[in-house]
Length: 556
Image 1 (cartoon, rainbow, N blue to C red):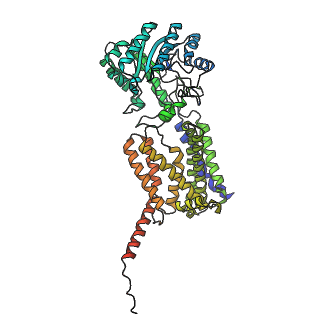
Image 2 (cartoon, rainbow, N blue to C red; image 1 turned 90 degrees about the horizontal axis):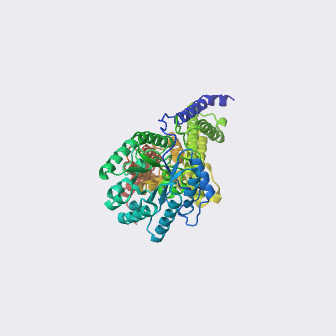
Image 3 (cartoon, rainbow, N blue to C red; image 1 turned 180 degrees about the vertical axis):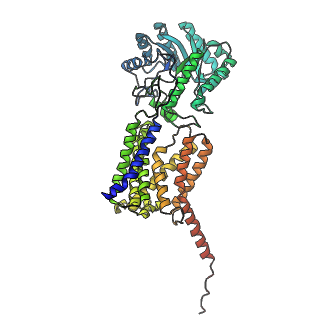
């Protein structure tokens, strides 16, 4: 009992700090309310779960579209579509029944036959539901993809307008409208531009998003005078990697959309938000961020209200409770009550266990958001379980005063992998966890060095092993004394440190997420200093022995 009493101050302090951290992260943020009861329009693609437009056999059932539009009707009276195949032609008659309107999209690509089918289907729909179709968008970002010329698109737009008598337009990123030929600009009834501050070549923080959009509209008005301009796509992702200081989050998505609504209302601007529902299939093309632009989550629940404060973690008390339980679980499995450590060790282990609880509470939802299939979810879960095991075992050896058990080399881990039937000792288990964390961090960092645009920074996944191994290595003096025969550690150290430097300069100091990842890489690399010192020391000894004169052989 006396031992448990000694644990109470650090445990209470660590738990209090955990709850305080969650309360700060989940604090409500005041934002301007939406100035109108309904949005002008929102992009609608009906795909859910494993459904994808790249599956030519898929046919979206009408009931699914009816359910979606009924859910959208209280929020907006208009939806924008992008194609009329795979069951999307049913959007128009369903919208007609619900009293909604449609910006009817025609998907234009390279295939002439497919293009003709899209055009003829859209014309038939427009004729049958003339009051429901607000306008027809002939092609989406076709110039950006380089699949047709502006002249060809102009011919298509003229044909659609002539056969339907409805307004027609073409939609593309604003830069490509400036490059479009005059014939295309003259063939549409209004210009539809896409402005996405997050995806700009020079990304902008959410605080500068509306200023940027205002500037773009002024440029387009100047280059295409006398034409009505509609913002056909604008929005902000609620999840994904940072791009410089453009940070995806629910609060930032709500902030951008609400500030845009205020500005659009005061400037009488027509617009369409991208998009109605999160689209998981986009993560294969655009990374995590691509799947999280929706006003509604994939499960069709709204992400935030259009009036009042918005919280990034509205259920933060539950998250705080999970974090504390995980922290206590780490200590319980490490058998904290069976040891009599120093007071400093109690505080260090308590704070570390609660910090690990926070990281794990963040990791598993993030892993679910990132995973695109069951295999990736299994990998994310395995990484989380390895982080939990790392926290448990390192806490256990610290409490027992046996930090030497955390000094197993990567070579010892490899030796067990070669002969696992010989049994796994605690020292080898910790070495295996170190090998797994270093290999995982190195793999993620190499991906970020060579193909960074759509890759996340897996902070939550590797924060626990990076921090725990670093603290334990300091405690056992591994950063000071030279450790020989650790070439693997030296190699990982060089790889992680080099990746950190490259990522920092490639991403820029404004990307705080990248900065944090670089810091974790350096924490993982620092213990390798002792390995390098050991290699150099061994080389000096070998050189000294090689240069030492030998005694003359006795005469025979």
